[in-house]
Image (cartoon, rainbow, N blue to C red; front, side):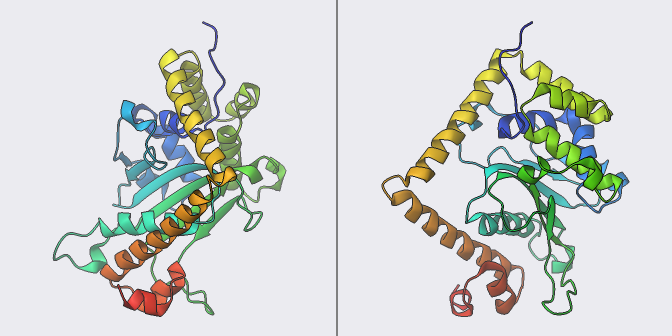
Amino acid sequence: MEKLFKITLRNDYAFKRVFGVEENKDILQDFLECILDIPSENIAGLELMDKELHKDLINEKLGILDIKLRLKDGTFVDIEIQNRWHRDFPERTLYYWSKMYNEGIKQGQDYTKLPKCITINLIGEGFNNNKRLHNKYVVLEQDTKEPLVSKLEIHILNLEQAKLLKEGQCKNNKTKRLLNWLKFIETDDPEVRNMLAQESPMMRKANATIEVMEMSPRDKWLYESRMKYEHDKASCISEGYHQGIERGFADGAYQNKLETAKNLLDIGLSVELISQATGLSKEEVEKL
């Protein structure tokens, strides 16, 4: 059967069809092993929190197609793919993390029972903070770099940087595996995927899933619906949408900061630390 369309896993529908379904949990495990400093046996016991793709998700707001999972040791992980970096993204990912962390405690439970929560963000383009392939953010003391807690991790994976790097620039095998996965996710060239898949059984399985999708009319419609949504959203942002979009994003980013600060207050963090994490003033935090 002839292929109906070409796929890139930068499309969040396609990404979840490959990494976010029960039959491909071994693919997801292989990918996570390249990112997290967690024993592979703990990652092997992962549980997907949303096991089905729903037909009514295509035109919902970004984030609805995230992959959410729980590891064997109770750690929660949220994975999101974003085609373009936006200025409110740091606040947004901290807000998502804080909600996930807040939801992990039951009434009357000791705060020490809160689970570790990790967000993983794959960024297509526009992340210019540095040239690193993989950024891992945690809460540290400013001068000594001593970690305050081990329960917060925010990862940012730079797909744009992956296009520029060669395997020989990787410092170890784990980084090489991650680079190959990011190249696999970023490209829409079947030949590039085929070449990468030759070295990895899990990539071969992922590639087989993609080849099935490329021949499916239903997957074509769902994929293109998400792609159209992304293009329309990007057009609104670039044109300013009569200047209202920019104002709306600014207001939304500020509201996210306030919600994040409130969530962090609820779990007992100090005003000073919350101010540093969100960019709000101490006075704004104290008013919550």
